[in-house]
Length: 244
Image (cartoon, rainbow, N blue to C red; front, side):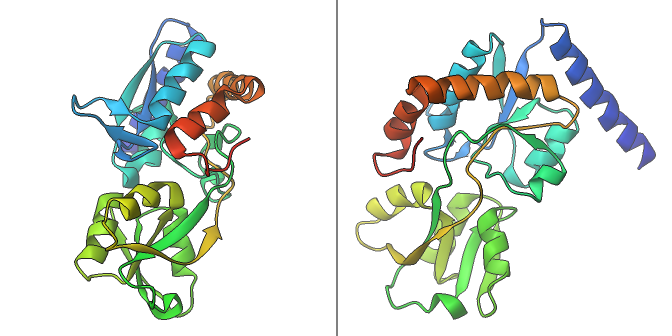
């Protein structure tokens, strides 16, 4: 354990120092499996809302960036260990996560979560509900008195569990679920009321990298100020998605 801790500390320190010299590449970590925020295109490249946003932020911050994909359930530990320099992966800002990482200001306003199932008659208070592991949706279901939470490592598996009858419904970001419902041909539908969770989505950084975080924070603010961030939200998340 001690050697692992020291290795992680060395990696994080090296990443911070390499940023300070102004010559290294900033590595942006994402999941690559959460459209429309981030996904892999036909060429295996990161695409989606956060790809365009991240590239624009790097340009404004005058930084050279590259993209790294990482499974969601280890995305924060691998940031802290120095495997990449920032997370831009549809990650909602929460007090629990802020105990481990530092966030920029949000680059999307708080967006509703929603339930989707294959029947409008599902009793959500006592249902089996699927959610992705380590998300604010999973935490919300766990606090519901009568509901049963089933967790899956990636969002596609949550949808598949409902289609297979393993879960009654799925709870996820509504922006993610809208195309799922539209493409289901009427087999899936929204159930109940939307659920407001989290403080919007932001970029996450190691607590030891305040200067890097500040560069991206300023770039996000500049995109809010000139309207270009709202334009990206409309293009990728839709006219009905909350914006600034």
